[in-house]
Image (cartoon, rainbow, N blue to C red):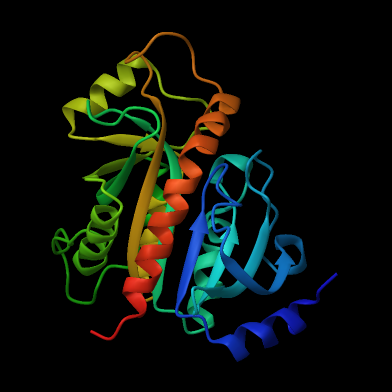
Length: 270
């Protein structure tokens, strides 16, 4: 088994420019990645191990069409019993390695009428509906009332690159709002109706806290939701994780192509 020290040496030699965190059923999406080194999550001190099906729990470093990137094949969720600092640890590790650009992907339920299973959405903002104390930060000195308003976590520059990359594939993707809920149970129809009223387009159980962590580290963030089901009450039948993984198998080639085009565009000189 590769040691963390040996893996870290490979990473520092390659100097990846971007970290990609892959969601449920997406571990094998980057088929053209030329792997230079890999390590299990369990081999990284303080990282923790994913327990959800579809998250292989491996970190890979390599080149995608000549561009060095770091890839987390899977993530850690709060609902698995991981503390919030564990959930944030992949992003913090990437920041310690000097990486400044983050691409997050997830599997999500579609709420917007255009988001049928098999489609994708670019995140322009999120609604953090997980435990409210998870993202509280110290109040700035001198602030005695409510703090200042905050922009979206998701970089307009990176959103534009993703939109153009999708256009090159002949796809017009919705740029929408993602709601992050605690899970692990899927939402009720009443909860989905409430999210509709709040302007939510897709819902899942990850991503928002990782994005919050990345912004706090001074990183630029983009994110993609792969829509694997309609929200509860918007289609017939009940929702199951194995159905999510089945639809992800259909989406994977297009998601992989989108990520590859985005990585190449992000490597081009400004």
